[in-house]
Length: 74
Image (cartoon, rainbow, N blue to C red; front, side, top):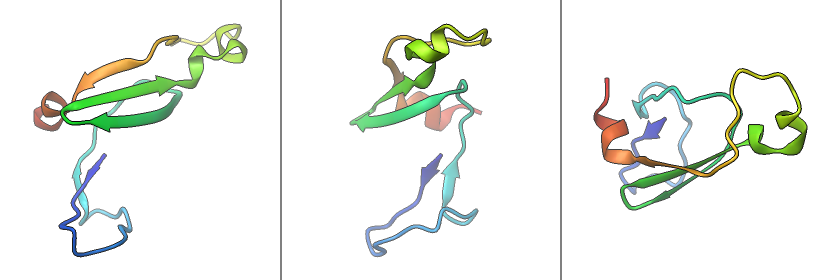
């Protein structure tokens, strides 16, 4: 999700009027980090505990996404 913060508020309540974009990502998302137009995502499914489980999705790498593409996707 991307939220609108005009710099005037010191907090967001994460409700509908603050949401700019919602993006569906694979399950087990653990951490995200934005750097300019790049978004880095890390998934819990890469941990040993989850790799041994029979899950439909495993990611054992940091995944780099383009924020501009995500923000403009449908």
